[in-house]
Length: 200
Image (cartoon, rainbow, N blue to C red; front, top):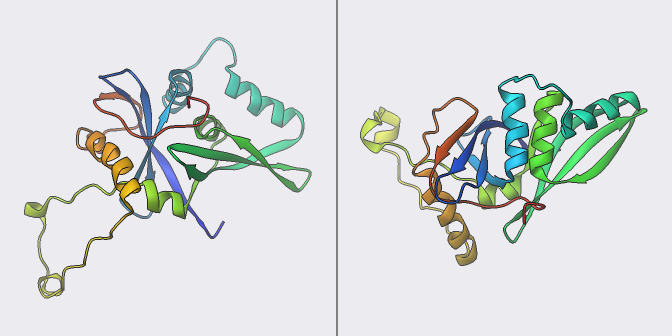
């Protein structure tokens, strides 16, 4: 777990251009956001749980949580462990009889389960380094302290060409996202990266 960072769900949004959904994960200790494309059913499942909407019958993710409980197993945490091409890979960490099991899963399903079980969502540091977005600060709103006035500007980090091309899509999307909104489904144009199983 030393190579993981904890995130929370910032919001679930829908693209006005193609009606695809995206979940924004925000790092707890830094102002970094990880956008992941998800399917409409997974987006609905996450939103329903975030908004604590009661449904008449258990949904698929509710059924899995109930099944784990019936087997005396417990979901400990969910993880986004890899990014290959434009596909994110997830993992469920399940405790059964004191033994931990790793279960391969789509990140969208991992997140839908995490909000129901109230367990941490972790992301591999390399994935955050490669795909996370840091919003541009409002330079005019910054107040310089005596320490920062004399500070030397840092050189921007140079990413590989392939990574820059992929991340430019994320940046275009986040320019139109109000990161101050409450968690839930919202509307916003453009498009970022994907979740296996929704190609996805």
